[in-house]
Image (cartoon, rainbow over all chains, first blue to last red; front, side, top):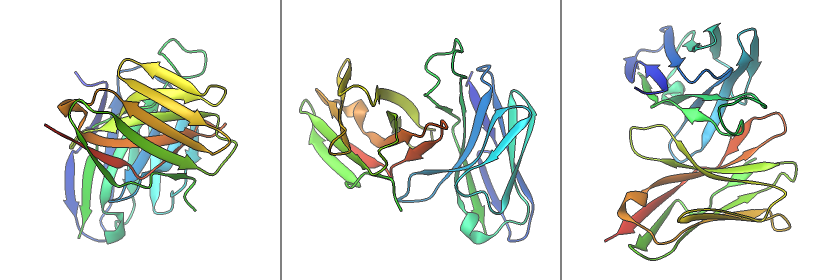
Length: 118
Length: 111
């Protein structure tokens, strides 16, 4: 079973619709991240959370919101989707410094959600 | 302003030869560097990393070299195998644990 899962894997929606992307992890990590990838660009950080009560904006948070429902769940919402939010979205997790899950510098990724906004 | 740059969008290498992937960065405060590998329809997977206090780290066929004065790192794969065909991302870590990513290099290993 995958350690980091994302649902849905693919989604096509229309401009103005509200969309939620979900991420679950079984790695026991406290830290979770949402990234987007556009063609020809690296991953850009949207939001990150270091524990259930902690939410931080990343490089490109405008137009997005997140919810950390539990240690294992981190969801990303597009309140009113627009075409330039068409991209590949990745969720990732990492351990806490001093944790037992390996190097805390490594991030572990889900398989991605391909979102198309028409 | 791209803080991490991978200037080669793609690289083609003969099977069995050495693959060298390059990455340049601009921020001298980065303290840790990572290489990730990505296959189509999958998320990136961690490959190898190096701390800024080292200049080389080796793991099997993979070696990462760091030249801090030039703000340059490279990933060497020897020998290259068909399964190495993938997109390789270089990432650099801020002290606040955020990763800054390069645009990736698509490596194609020719049989």
